[in-house]
Length: 109
Image 1 (cartoon, rainbow, N blue to C red):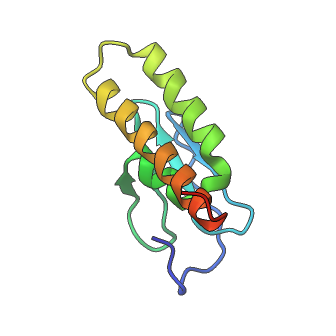
Image 2: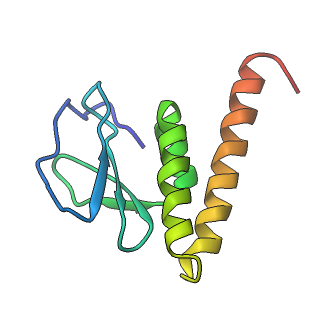
Protein backbone atom coordinates (compact mmCIF):
# COMPACT_ATOMS: atom_id res chain seq x y z
CA UNK A 1 0.00 0.00 0.00
CA UNK A 2 2.85 2.39 0.65
CA UNK A 3 4.77 3.24 -2.46
CA UNK A 4 8.39 4.11 -3.04
CA UNK A 5 7.23 7.30 -4.78
CA UNK A 6 5.35 8.59 -1.76
CA UNK A 7 7.01 11.68 -0.32
CA UNK A 8 6.47 13.04 3.21
CA UNK A 9 3.50 15.40 3.47
CA UNK A 10 0.88 16.60 5.96
CA UNK A 11 -2.87 16.49 5.17
CA UNK A 12 -4.52 19.90 5.27
CA UNK A 13 -8.16 18.77 5.49
CA UNK A 14 -9.92 19.79 8.69
CA UNK A 15 -13.22 17.91 8.42
CA UNK A 16 -14.65 17.93 11.98
CA UNK A 17 -16.17 14.46 11.39
CA UNK A 18 -12.81 12.90 10.57
CA UNK A 19 -10.04 11.87 12.95
CA UNK A 20 -6.59 11.87 11.39
CA UNK A 21 -3.73 9.53 12.29
CA UNK A 22 -0.63 11.22 11.01
CA UNK A 23 2.50 9.15 10.66
CA UNK A 24 5.69 10.85 11.92
CA UNK A 25 7.49 9.79 8.74
CA UNK A 26 4.99 11.87 6.76
CA UNK A 27 3.63 8.92 4.74
CA UNK A 28 0.94 6.29 5.24
CA UNK A 29 -1.51 8.72 6.86
CA UNK A 30 -4.92 7.38 7.88
CA UNK A 31 -8.25 8.96 8.67
CA UNK A 32 -11.35 7.63 10.41
CA UNK A 33 -14.71 8.93 9.19
CA UNK A 34 -16.89 9.14 12.30
CA UNK A 35 -20.06 9.41 10.20
CA UNK A 36 -19.60 6.04 8.49
CA UNK A 37 -17.16 4.12 10.69
CA UNK A 38 -14.79 3.82 7.76
CA UNK A 39 -10.98 3.97 7.67
CA UNK A 40 -9.34 5.86 4.83
CA UNK A 41 -5.83 5.74 3.40
CA UNK A 42 -4.80 9.31 2.67
CA UNK A 43 -2.72 10.13 -0.37
CA UNK A 44 -1.08 13.43 -1.20
CA UNK A 45 -2.04 13.57 -4.87
CA UNK A 46 -5.01 11.19 -4.99
CA UNK A 47 -8.41 10.85 -3.44
CA UNK A 48 -8.63 9.11 -0.09
CA UNK A 49 -9.02 5.34 -0.43
CA UNK A 50 -11.51 3.54 1.84
CA UNK A 51 -9.95 0.52 3.50
CA UNK A 52 -10.92 -1.92 6.19
CA UNK A 53 -9.59 -1.73 9.72
CA UNK A 54 -7.54 -4.87 8.94
CA UNK A 55 -5.73 -3.14 6.09
CA UNK A 56 -5.32 0.01 8.19
CA UNK A 57 -3.65 -2.07 10.92
CA UNK A 58 -1.30 -3.71 8.42
CA UNK A 59 -0.42 -0.33 6.93
CA UNK A 60 0.26 1.19 10.35
CA UNK A 61 1.08 -1.58 12.89
CA UNK A 62 2.38 0.98 15.38
CA UNK A 63 -1.07 2.57 15.39
CA UNK A 64 -3.12 -0.57 15.98
CA UNK A 65 -4.02 0.56 19.51
CA UNK A 66 -5.53 3.77 18.15
CA UNK A 67 -7.22 1.92 15.28
CA UNK A 68 -8.84 -0.49 17.75
CA UNK A 69 -9.78 2.27 20.19
CA UNK A 70 -11.39 4.58 17.62
CA UNK A 71 -13.21 1.68 15.97
CA UNK A 72 -14.47 0.33 19.30
CA UNK A 73 -15.71 3.73 20.49
CA UNK A 74 -17.54 4.20 17.19
CA UNK A 75 -19.16 0.75 17.49
CA UNK A 76 -20.29 1.50 21.06
CA UNK A 77 -21.84 4.77 19.90
CA UNK A 78 -23.58 3.12 16.91
CA UNK A 79 -24.56 -0.37 18.17
CA UNK A 80 -27.33 -0.86 15.60
CA UNK A 81 -25.45 0.45 12.56
CA UNK A 82 -25.05 -2.12 9.78
CA UNK A 83 -21.29 -1.45 9.67
CA UNK A 84 -20.65 -2.73 13.23
CA UNK A 85 -20.38 -6.41 12.27
CA UNK A 86 -18.02 -5.73 9.38
CA UNK A 87 -15.84 -3.42 11.47
CA UNK A 88 -15.64 -6.05 14.23
CA UNK A 89 -14.55 -8.68 11.70
CA UNK A 90 -11.99 -6.31 10.16
CA UNK A 91 -10.44 -5.59 13.57
CA UNK A 92 -10.22 -9.29 14.38
CA UNK A 93 -8.61 -10.09 11.00
CA UNK A 94 -6.13 -7.23 11.35
CA UNK A 95 -5.08 -8.19 14.87
CA UNK A 96 -4.70 -11.84 13.86
CA UNK A 97 -2.69 -10.97 10.75
CA UNK A 98 -0.30 -8.78 12.74
CA UNK A 99 0.19 -11.35 15.49
CA UNK A 100 0.86 -14.11 12.94
CA UNK A 101 3.19 -11.87 10.94
CA UNK A 102 5.34 -10.89 13.90
CA UNK A 103 5.21 -14.38 15.42
CA UNK A 104 6.50 -15.72 12.10
CA UNK A 105 9.33 -13.20 12.13
CA UNK A 106 10.22 -14.37 15.63
CA UNK A 107 10.24 -18.00 14.49
CA UNK A 108 7.07 -19.02 16.33
CA UNK A 109 4.47 -21.20 14.65
